[in-house]
Amino acid sequence: MSEGLDSAYSIATPADCLRVYRAWAESYDGGFAAGMDYLLPAHVARAFLAAGGAGPVLDIGAGTGLLAERLRGAGFSAPIDGVDLSPEMLERARVKGIYRSLVQADVMQPLPLAGGYGGIVSSGTFTHGHVGPSALPHVLAQARRGAQVALSINAGVFAAMGFDAALAALPITGLQLIEVEIYGQGAALMDPAHASDRALIALFRKG
Ligand SMILES: C[S@@+](CC[C@H](N)C(=O)[O-])C[C@H]1O[C@@H](n2cnc3c(N)ncnc32)[C@H](O)[C@@H]1O
Image 1 (cartoon, rainbow, N blue to C red):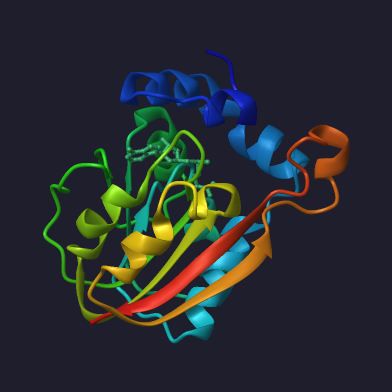
Image 2 (image 1 turned 90 degrees about the horizontal axis):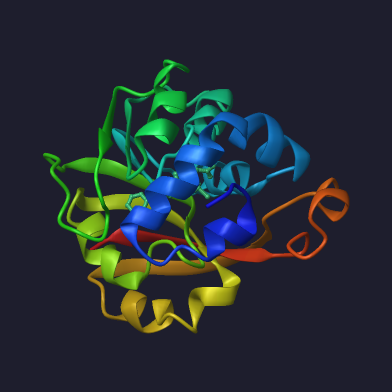
């Protein structure tokens, strides 16, 4: 499998995911994120902080660490841990030196972490071919009561994969859905088919 959004959106198994991101990790920041003017990590960071998000934070599908970079860029100084299936993506995040710990794990399964997080964030992970709503209880299990959560969910899968029903069934309070553009103006040149893709940021607290 090659790199790029079409390959990523076609992922069907954890083995596919590992292959796609092994190929994509090296060029993800400089090729994809820069070329597509990838705005989503900044949107999630802004929403989390505006809602009063506190640490320690767990970043779900941390990838190369773009969301933690946006949090640090906004002055957020609490510890940030990350979890991701792809060791190659995690290695890119590790060398940036902004995470307290990075763990390779599948968020579709119960996570091998101690929990107690004051904040949970995620950008770009709940999307086509990636992580579906059945992961939400595993994610929420890592949060302490009252923790602020900010997760992006691709608008194209939100209803189709049942995120609306899954969110309604979770023990959470104050759910807001904020619709944002995933990419900026550069995307029209690089990948017109995906340039206008949108996501919903699900912002809520653990009840
Ligand atoms: C589009 S990237 C987003 C990375 C980063 N959050 C960002 O916004 O740049 C999606 C990430 O989700 C990870 N991922 C996909 N399925 C996963 C799973 N089941 N468990 C953990 N991570 C997963 C991939 O390895 C990849 O790093």
